[in-house]
Length: 191
Image 1 (spheres, rainbow, N blue to C red):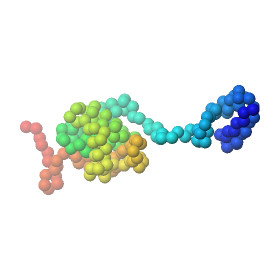
Image 2: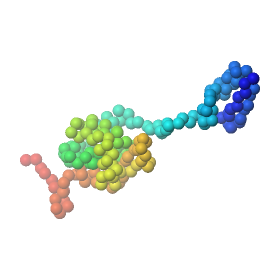
Image 3: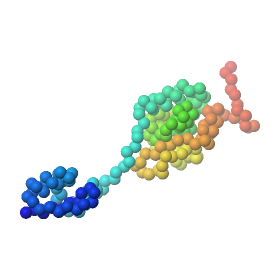
Image 4: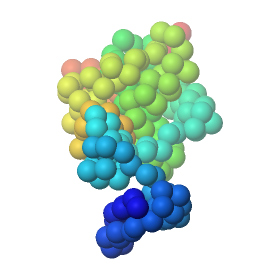
């Protein structure tokens, strides 16, 4: 008669003697599969060479569209277009979605570099920032001092970024436009 031994989910070790059909039906009843060879020594659910990554919440396309629409229709839209979108300073374009979420959406959520890239792509081809460029701006540039993360950065795990109080102040000065030597904001009036 075949003999089988297995461990129940609560830790109880069960050894049974019976026909192969009885052993198989008992194993299947307790949610196990008959194991063969050396795999029986492996822990249930452990698979060699595979990592389990945390399931991250993805931002919906509707929310990305909402961020883009907020950028285009907020009270500062003209200044944003003139002082951020028309300029080549990539870090400011990366910080812009974080600023809009903070100021006009109550800092309700953070976004990843992929989502930042999608927002900038929706703003136009010349404004688009790649995911790698967004990551570089948020981690290695001077703009990195203006962002907060939801967790420590790790490869393969999405990190969500938000703007801190200094970042909000910085973005307000960028949106306000250039200043002269005395520190006063220069105002250019249309002729």
